[in-house]
Amino acid sequence: MKKIFGNDRGFLLMAAYMVPVLIGLAALVLEFNQLRVIHNELQAAVDAASMAGVLRAEIDTEIIYENEYDSDGNLVNITPTVENYTIINSQQEAFNYAYKAFKKNMDALGWDDDGSTRITVYASDLYGEILASGMTDAITGNGVSDDRRDFSDVDQYYFKAEIRVKTALIAPAMRVLAFIAGEEAPVDNFGEIIMEADSVSRTKIQIE
Image (cartoon, rainbow, N blue to C red; front, side):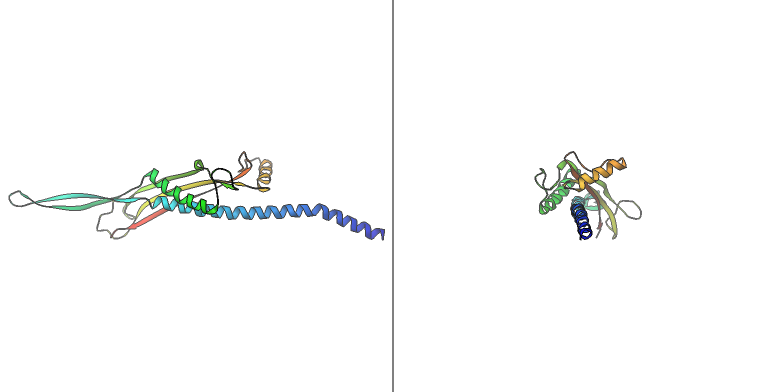
């Protein structure tokens, strides 16, 4: 009887030690999966923002006017001719478009910009840039004339965002692992994990 009791007591003691460890591991796995979902949501919001920025671009038509004269030298007609097309995009306006798209998704996801919720996005952590602006023929690299009927490169826009995520276990665990590896953990001074995503969108246009 004593042996059986002793075995039961040992099992109970081991269980008492193991249950908190298992609960902690389960919590880590749960938080990790939540972070994966959050990162996917961030990537989708960044993709939408970069697309909004690139679609802000406008086509500017360069036109030359050819004068026609009669035999007496009198002007009888002025014929407009399309010489070239140029894409015009504004850094500030493109960013405004991108920011509005990102903010719409941010609000839908329940993220904030003042630290009042689990996920925070600061305006200073958002960045957008025009990578290319100017329509050129995809084959020759020259300006596209009005009689070309193919797709030509138009514009590219880059957008990047960082978010801060409050966690109970992942941030401390990452700090410990980073310390052991001698690296810097992606955790800010408030113990929030820093996650980032970027995207480049490119548009093409068909000249009719």
